[in-house]
View: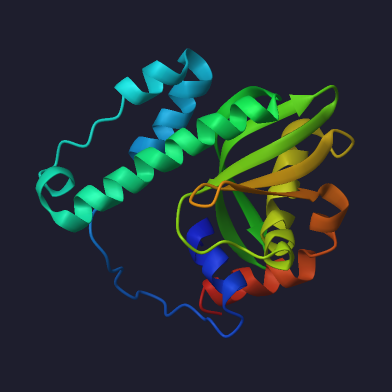
Length: 196
């Protein structure tokens, strides 16, 4: 199975090819805590989301890198909530996981929120890391996501995919037709992300 993060790396770096069974590197990552905070925000409001953040490891309080990372994630959550307020579309589902066959591999997709306006449905993905995708990269990344959204709501209602780059407060919204047009490039990136 290919994670969406490794798929994104393959989209960003055309020469990237994963090495099967390569050990992952890096320290603790608070992404699950902050993904849960987004779900809580949509269900119970801003204050409940903030109050629900728990980073009990000393790494987040005493290690300089850990403290900075935790602060960056908290700022990014605040950016998400501000962007949501400005966006105005209603969320009807949050924390949606899907596995999708792409390029002969299984891609794991996590959608932070499914939102709608009228009959137009959009899958929203929060991007927490530093690299901001270009428009062309976002179109490739959106290709499997629009398929996942179509599986949920039907092709006639799947309107777009919105990437919210939280470090820069940039929103890149990709139409369903632009996303579908990048299916071949997305399949290639998934295969490279799988090490094939």
